[in-house]
Length: 312
Image 1 (cartoon, rainbow, N blue to C red):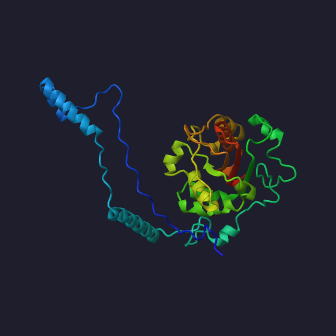
Image 2: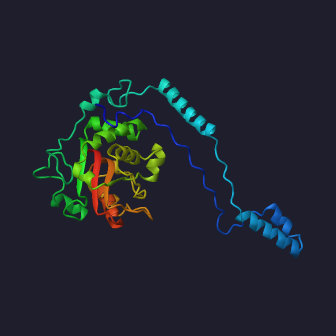
Image 3: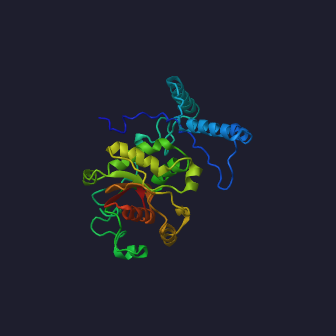
């Protein structure tokens, strides 16, 4: 029997881009005068008052928005689909690991990924062998973070970050293979405990920095969270503002902790749900997840779970 994720189409049609907002004039710079305003300077007081009333009526009248005909919207989708077919013809989809044509992650490579045994993993931090005595979230290793235990209520990871798992993440995140988001989210969804879903949590994500998003063209954790929320039937909610920090991949453990301190904050005006599943691609030291969870706690979240695709 096919899973919910396998029943989805390989390509999804992109939505129409939103209209660009009007650019306000810079403070201290007068707006350009219209033709009627320039002519009003030479009118008599009575004529000027009539012109002003006419302008007020024009401003008060609701402006009719030009609706796009259905044929134009259908044409946009057809052009998008034709472009996808053309790109697939020139550059066929290949497996991220073995380069076999057909899918972004073939069944043979998916079966060989280094999955974490959930019966042996730590239920608090998701470490692969921490069910009895965890070596990752004990008070000694938590001391540099200024706490005795992780701030989240539970964490799971699907894979150990070996070369194969790192290759999948690199192809998805840095080489722009967005089609990997769906199989990655499907793998993550199998590791979510039923007790988490009983709380009806919303799915949030750790946002990328503005520089990383411009460089990649998308937010990798956001796309993972969208796919995971659809698979488990939960609400998707962007709750955290983009952090201003250095790239974590080349920093040591101590530098990562210092880099992430107070770097996360909740979006202004965002309604924080009581239960949240926080999504990210990789967990190394846990400093990014800790900063994000603390920001959600300050915003009013009561229960926060963390789910990542891979971890060290």
